[in-house]
Image (cartoon, rainbow, N blue to C red; front, top):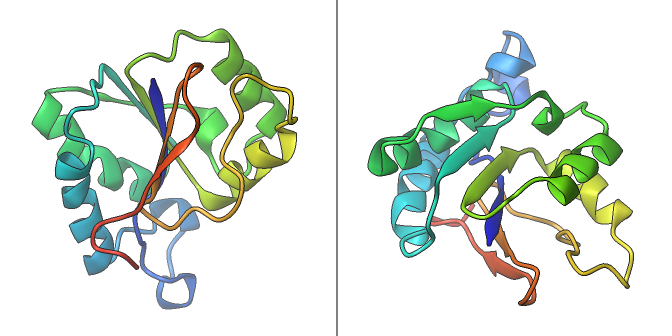
Length: 150
């Protein structure tokens, strides 16, 4: 089993004058990031991957601290990454115990690549900020809504 996570709620683009990659979480996003520790209780995590953006790093910080794990930045999780390349990595890697924190547009692009006959479909539809998908080759997708909701 592995987890695909959309970063928690960030400060709106209209309220941020710096580079988008440095846009931080909002207060709601910080609460959602902290809530992931309880929300993902019982999910064995061994590696945390994230987009090289502040909002993704900050989303994973509480989980990393709670599980004594480091966060590994992965360029294919960035909002402008090529979905085909990310899909190839996700299809070829041992994903057990991994969590991949990315952006809504990346999750949408992955969903567009999913074919009905695939054994590992990617999330289809909207994923709320701070929402997570549990994926496994043997069970259907399971969505976990963010706490608190947006």
